[in-house]
Length: 130
Image (cartoon, helix red, strand yellow):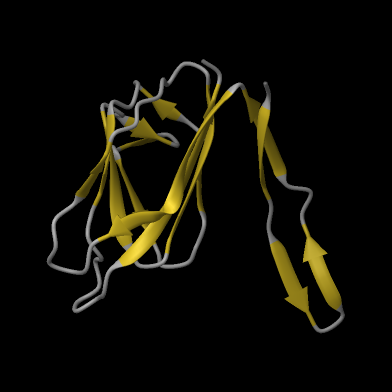
């Protein structure tokens, strides 16, 4: 079965909407972590997610958190051409990852990075060819 992810941007202006054509990626395997995945309040510990996926065949990943946080991908050494295993998220802003190196063996979602920030949730969708 083939799955797709379409990442596009829409801007609403007084005269209507401006919509880009989007980036479409396809793969045969998808991991979708529901928004019930918790991002702890500031000062709390990280939450471990049991999820693994390969770098070979990786197509794309999208992340969206309701609070700012850092997500660490264990085993990954480069994300979108930058030597890191972390993705820093801004609250309510979709982040797309187009490329990784080295397979991911686990995911860790850090607590809210805002001073006295409350808990939130995160959604993660990973698309690849197995």
